Structures are given as structure tokens and as C-alpha cells.
Length: 477
Image 1 (cartoon, rainbow, N blue to C red):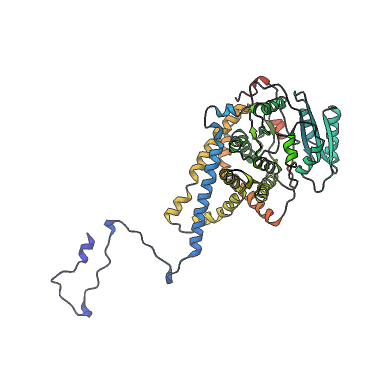
Image 2: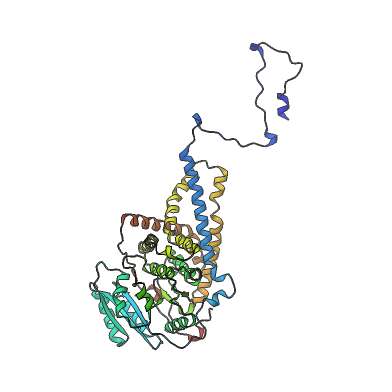
């Protein structure tokens, strides 16, 4: 080996300095393997900026991995055992009606869709229910449509005028609550398509479980409208079909915004909805969970409430900003601290802080990309940055299977281009959600709490038509 030639020889003469043989080169240890070395910049100083950048890269990778893994676990909750889907469905043989219902339908500038929604709700087969349409005093278009529907269904629909300023959904709900006659209060949005058998099934669920709250399923339908509507549809599919059941089992649940039913005494006990919260459904769910209310979730595809995705990216962006900011408001309010167990409190903190996590990772992603492409990153750091890819790929695979099942359940033909849009839209949609989370954080810091309304056009009514088939209800097919 080369390093043998650097050993001194016993017979070598000692030469004067001017004629000495030059010092042998440093040993070549190539045959032993290249050993790692650690070097510091000139002056033995550490490049702290570079260290911080690499640390940020690692934190982003770990954060994205944790979020992806937990999201994947909750997405798959309903499919973890053969009987899970059947247990989360409505009863195949519902009990006789035993409760009365008041259905609250707030609408603001919803003249295009609210009339049809009220007609559909009025066709419920339950023997004891009423509908209260809530309209603003500055909204003559929606007021006219609501009163026309009330004239078509006398004794079923009433109209309440909301004169609060500024207006928002929880204020409208609180305005109508004192006029409700039913044992159970249900909430629907102005564009909802509701199955005619839904109230009978909800009534039975209350009797079977003695629940304080029953959350029904909601499903966006118009998955062909845009590349983001496809992903939005799948979000709802996994959220209501699987993830909310996990939350109910953990006894901490941010409720959905509609098709939620609460016993009136519990609403009166908790003083209705928080009028200043941008996610009043989440806030109510947290308060009820903290008070020990029993929440039951039921999902049968045949009787889900059908809705539409926001028609523009701008509208979706505002919607997600409002939801995220609402979660931050609930986190700051601190009702979740009253949950009885440490596990529940940690779970609640993680869920409610998700906008912060998304915002941080969203801000770090450009830094991470810059470091990867323009800075020489150590091999171990580069490998760590690839860790989130594994759960992401698994999640996309699950979403592909979910899209196929969605098409089969709802009788929609899923084309190859739809699968391609799903895959190609994965990263852009995550960036989009991160941007909405960043905006929500800045709005919260600046104290901007204005309600940004989501527009509705009734696109979901073109996507599918509800047909009452009571014999299929509860089958979980």
C-alpha cells in the first residue's frame, strides 16, 4: 500500500537542510476508505445562518411527516376493521319517531339556492318538524325567496329577520334559537340537498344512543368542476366517512357546519353559538365535548347532505382562511383545557393548532427549496428531507382508492383524467392550504375578524339528483 513508502529507512543518510529530501506526501488512505472530516470556516467560526437553515429544513421535514402520518391514520380509521363502516352507518331498521325537530337555515344573499333548499327540507317524512329560515334585514332578495317558500309550505316554514350588525352565521342562529319549538335543533346551509328520510334516521339515532349531539354526513358532489374541487370533494369524503368517527371516539370533536343536530337543552345550557367565532361549529363542538356531552356521528352514503365546492380559488381561499382563523380563535379561547384527560387536551391542542403548523411549514417550504437547490446540503440532511415523500405517496394511493369508491357509491363515472388531476394537484393544493393558513395567522394577529362569506350557485344539484330509497338507508353500501 502507498502509505508503506513513507516509512523511514535505517540506512538513509542524514543530509544537510539544503539538500534534504522533501517531506513525503501525506499518507493516502484511499484503500482504508475515506474518513469523514469536520472543518470550520476561516477563523474557526461557525456559520450559524447555515446551521439554522439546515435545522429549519429538518424541522419542516419532520413536521410534514408528522402531519402526513396522523392525517393518513385518521383517514383510514373507518376501514381499520371490517365492521367499522357498518357500525358508523345509520340503523337499517330505524325506531319510531320520538323527538320533534326545528331546522335552522340561515341565508345571506342566497336567493339562487335557498328556495329549493327550503322546498327539499319541507318534504321530510318525519311527522314532527318545523323550519326557520333566517334572513338579514338588508337582504330583500333572500327574504323574498324565503317568504315564497313559507307560502308554499304553510305551518312548516317560518321566516325570522336578523337585524344584528355586523352579520354572521352564529348571530343568525342565536337570533332564531328562542323561537325554536323542537326538542332537537338541526342546522343546514342555504344550498343543501337533504334526503327526505334523514330526520327519521336522526331521530332513531338519538333514541338508540341517548346522544346529546348527532352529526350526520355531508358530501361535496361536483368533483369535475375544477382541479381543486376534486381534492375538496375527497377531503369531505374522508372527513365525514372516517375521521369524524375517530374524533367522536376520542370524545373531542369539532362539529361540522351543517347536518348537525343538538338537543335544545344542551344549546340553552351552553348559551347557543359563539357570535364572534369564525368557526362556530368547531367552537360549539369543543364546548360540548368539554362539558361532557355525548356526540355520535352517523354516515350512510345514501342520506348524506349534498353540497357544492366553492366556485373559484379566491372563494375557497377565503373559506379556508376563515376556518383556520376560527380554529385559532377556539385555541385561544381555551375551553379545550376543561377536557378531563391529558390525552384529550393534547389531542385538542394539536388539532386546533393545525393552522399554525400549516403556516409554519408553508413559510419554510420556499426556504427548504432554496437550500436544496442553491446550497450544498449534507447527505444526511438531504435524506431527511425525502422522508415526507413516503407517507405522502401512501396518502395519494389512499385518495385514489377513495375516489374510486366515491364514484362507485354515488354512481359517478371517474375518468382517467380525474385520477391524473388528483395526482398532479397534490403538491399545489398543499401549497394553497398552507397559504390560507398563513393568511389566517396574520389576520388573527391583526385582529381582523370579519366574516368572509362563501358564494353558492347550486353546482352540486347538477352533479347528482337525490332519490328517496328508504330500503337502502343504513346498509352502508
